Length: 247
Length: 345
Image 1 (tube, rainbow over the protein chains, first blue to last red):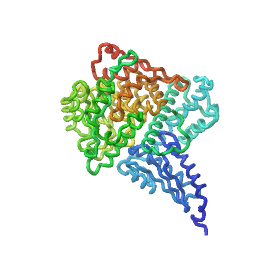
Image 2: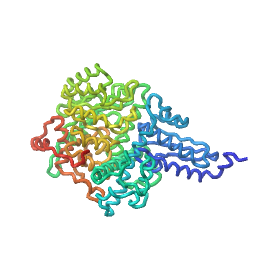
Image 3: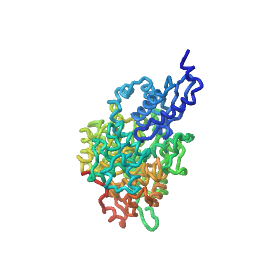
Image 4: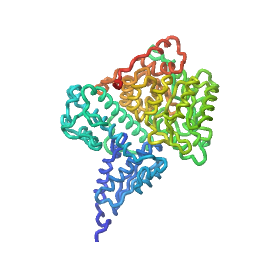
């Protein structure tokens, strides 16, 4: 007889590692960074019966409930999809709306179902807004590196995504564009308007790159505040993932 | 005045508080929010230098003597502007009210400017009460929280006709400085509570009022900066920027300052220590000593001059509030310049 228990017994470490990797694909939508890098995952365990137990924590008791909900729901989806996981529990700790969010996500109730009269809409448009910001910030990352390596800034308007150096920054930008349904091929414009998907011409380039830089600075400053608050709130906490190299 | 290297800085701390978040002031049944609120503030203090951190008991409630010393005796502040935060749902006597601020101010003439607040959902009665507070305390500014709940409402917008009535009243009363909190997460709030679009709308409709966006719109600095390039009467309150980033994240602090100077320029930035979250002393001293790092990553940003720092630390607020500054600085107060940012076409 093959039961959940016999299938997974002894394989928990491998499954746990896969669950951790899955959590690494879940982003804070505003900061555009994985929960695992931000130190938001405080517990990640897999039981012999294939139950994944994940606990999340945030920098403040009053972090925006919409973003909190997205992260808990995304974590639930990512962990549930890991082979060998038969049951998933994702719980948010130390947050004013934790009970409502944890119940809502477990019941697959959606944001409106969870917050009833307090929410007017699901969070799709919120997510899309922040993906557009991620595209802008990602454009700065890619273009800044190219300019530092000698590319003429004025010439960026004529370049394609394939002209950018191969690497994680370019692929991250490509991924965000794909998620938004924007052109993401090597022959598509390197610099495009995330609202319309059309390439930015030379006349609009300076302003667009200024906005891209500003968006990245804002995103990284927010990340800095959030990381600092998390450390102040959980002094003993060690952040997993990559060390913070920004300062 | 703070003096350093032969230069004098008239310091206006444009964002200060005198609060009572002690357990005795918690509304029964609301203790978790009252406690959560002050602990959240306390965590922000953790972003400042370790030697300036307070134990939670002191942070919950500090006395008048402590505040006067921290600001005026050791903190280099010449004049401070109170920004009230009522929160009467959680705190029996309010968290930091116009009345508490005003009473303290009356005991120390010439040290404070007492701003008040309004909530357009309080209707005609609120409008009358606003007028009375302005008359009683001589307020020339208001501090607004658009994300605050009221009954079944999850917040309010500066675009609403009710808000317009209050802004008209402000204009009529000579209350010309509208400080709007769009900053670090505060509950209760609506999902659009950080959106700065309503400030854009109000700033266009009320060109004679000044809109000071506290905490520079964090966490939406980009939306704020972009909006500010289009609205000449929009300003940035630096509370949280200096206190929260200068020590804890110096590289980001430099970038944020670089962006603010680029998009808004030296005349639109107002220093605020956000006491008692952060003491002014280390912020004033640190900002005067601070300079844009001279490296490739910061190449887009210009260094800050002494004249620009003087404006940010006090002369800009003095201009907005008609505050008299020492004679030698009076002429610098009135000199304004254009930002180098890229306005929309």
